[in-house]
Length: 183
Image 1: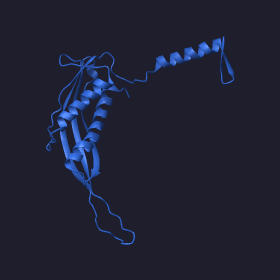
Image 2: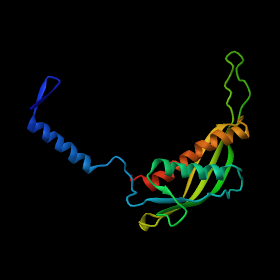
Image 3: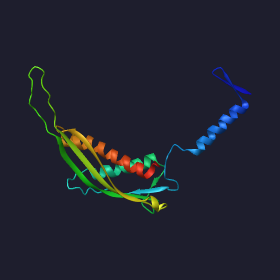
């Protein structure tokens, strides 16, 4: 028995050797990179918003988004009783600060000049307590922060619907990677 691939013949011994090498390489490295081995259940508590400036929907949205991330992208099952993994925390900062000042003057009437729009920066910080009850050495307490820069002409509802989502998605990615990914 021989196989022909693009004008070359692979004999039976070479084919089986190639197949053996591929299976050995596959068993040496997994592409999941997950540090979760024995864990089956997870409990993610509500993240209260304890920031000085309170976005009324942030706590509920962040809590729902982080729960969805873990339940959709892992094999963990949500539970309220005796979980293998506990994730909880609080939103400690939600602030909007100016980053650039606008200049509405036109310097040259022929070319139209350069107009720089003012920008603001949204910063969100979340404190997280991660407890792995099966492997306590993996547990940690950390703060995660991210920001989104946007034009100052955005309305408050635009900021809350788009910019908050950008910052919280990045924070959730960092938390998820620190807990699940084995990098």
